[in-house]
Amino acid sequence: MDKDILNYIKEAQGAGMSYEQIAQELQKAGWSMADTLRLLLSSAKHVDASPVPLAISADNIKKFFGSIKALKGVSVKVPYGKVFGLLGPNGAGKTTLIRILTTLLRQDGGSATVAGYDIHGQADEVRSVIGLTGQYSAIDDYLTGRENLELVGRLYHREKKEIKRRAQELLDKFGLTDAADRQTKTYSGGMRRRLDLAMSLFNRPRVLFLDEPTQGLDPQSRIALWQIITEQVAEGTTVLLTTQYLEEADKLADMIVVMNHGEIIAEGTPQELKSKIGGDVLEIHLNKGADVLRVADILRDLAKENPHVEEELGIVSVPASHGASTLLEAVRLIDKESIVISDIMLRRPTLDDVFLTLTGHKQA
Amino acid sequence: MNTTLRISRTISDIIAITRRNLIRYTRLPQLIVFSTIQPVMFLLLFTYVFGGAIQTSFHDYITFLLPGIIVQTVLFGSMQTGIGLAEDLSRGMIDRFRSLPMAHSAILAGRTLTDMLRNAFVIVLMVIVGFFIGFRIEHGIGEFGIAVLLTLLFGFAFSWVSATVGLMVKEVETAQVAGFIWIFPLVFASSIFVPIETMPAWLQSFAKHTPITATVDAVRALSLGQPWHTNFWQALLWTFGILSFFIPLSVYFYNKRKN
Image 1: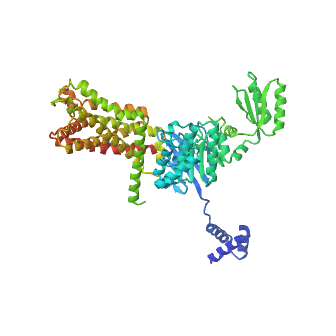
Image 2: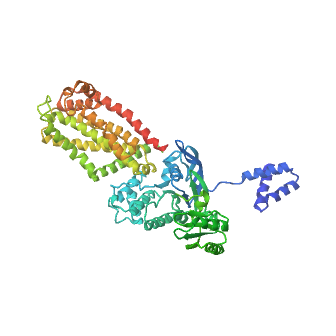
Image 3: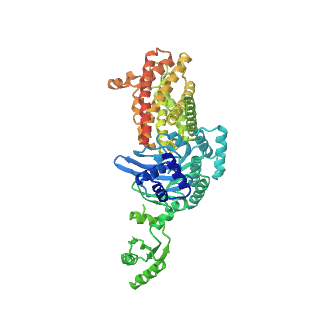
């Protein structure tokens, strides 16, 4: 009997009826309120609720180093094909989280899966579908670029021929063909990073972990590396990257998690995070010796927000909810006090401003 | 994964790591010097500078010295294990390896195996140089072969001691100091360079009971055709004792990185 009713509910739903409408129909047919509820609840249970598969799913991950709480219960969900940015200052716990997700470190609490594999119980499976580029280029200085790649290939237990082919392919792709047979101690910083990344990509990982991938690189190499990462994502790799560069997270990530002191303090798309602080930001630069704090007071009254003051540099900034009219009003008020402005601008908020708003201090 | 596949992969991983370590040896000038010129220099200096002054029961000092000095060389060589591991740790190579689906045991096994192969090379080199300056295998070549194998195995055991030190200290410079500071007194207060009977009584009682003296005496007896069985079993017991203590200990320190 129940089964027939459940089928009826399913069909009714399929026909576009809402739960309310179905409930009314059931009651009309003589079912009590309690029975109606029971039936609707059990029908809801039969709805195929298989969740969207996640590339990374971490649930309440905790990690302690002695008395230091490096991670205080961090949860992240990363769908396939996305770039996920972990943003935060040194000591926020970004690297610790990456080391746990890549099976290098054991968590003290919580659980996580990477590409569907449990990081603890299926560590070997996890390792065969991930790539990791750590903070320091983990390449052997005394091997050539090719030898480094072939070593990794061997440790992935690939066929000899395939190792050679794939190594050559990666060398070509990463612009290392000419340097392929030189020892890597002769490589530049950018080349080392590219080789490091190439080694991480040897096995065509489904999930790529990048821990501060562009740290210490010159702007040109950094942009080149961004290009490579973007290409990888286009080919379907899911990327989790940590960075201290706000610009980098903004540029690369579809989703950003902001971490501080082992906790997530905000998450969202770069756009969402920026909108957290509202519209544009008014930034005023003052000449040396000018009364910075007086300007800060004026802006506080004007914007009804606490301005950010960098006293030594003579810079005051504040969210400007009314854009240009806030700017005009600010100029008028400051001019009245005979304080000389050296520069004034309205700018789009950066993630730096987000961090400032969230934590009350600029990121380290 | 079935057992056969697991074993064959582990072996292939050990070979890959060993190969990588050996390539490094051929390309690092200080390591080449350390494993060729330095031991030969020691051999020549001891033979010609101290040889005349040291009284042994043999017709010439080189006959006495060579079996001892190959043990000393192998011990010094084994200290490279810890330095190499500390270097790989500090440069992120070990993390790279650990993020791969490889056998983790291969990282330590490959390292110690590399140093054993290098030690084998150095022993051959020293025996050749020794031959030119008067060393002769006095007894059967078979016994000398056993002596070389015992030396290698003894060095392998000390590689694990060194691995433990390297994994504990994690820094190259510290590993260098920590690796050598305790080995010097052990090496010199032994029967390697001089007969123990020439030492003061208090030192004799120490020197007589070290694993180094046991091994050197066995190697010397095997090379020179003296009765060797007692020394040999003693040395072997020391070797396996060291192995069975320090392999688990270094694995423990290796795994500790996960916490």
